[in-house]
Length: 80
Image: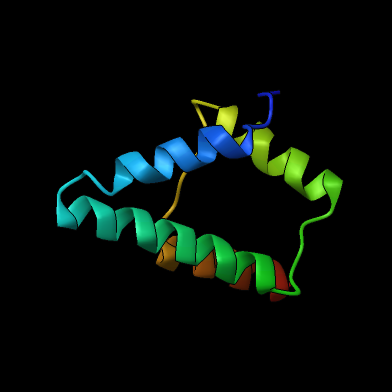
């Protein structure tokens, strides 16, 4: 696990962001706003769910499917 940043380190990064081009500053602001929105949400993953997400993200051979494929698969499971 990464050590938490000090307030001074965070402040230094935020000061550097102000030197970036406006488009990149907007990207940074969008990311921070999304984090605030996420923090305000009542939805939370359990520790087990978060572990499963991390496991799946680490799996380089994970199978992917389109939304249509997922929907068809889901319907097959519901309709015996």
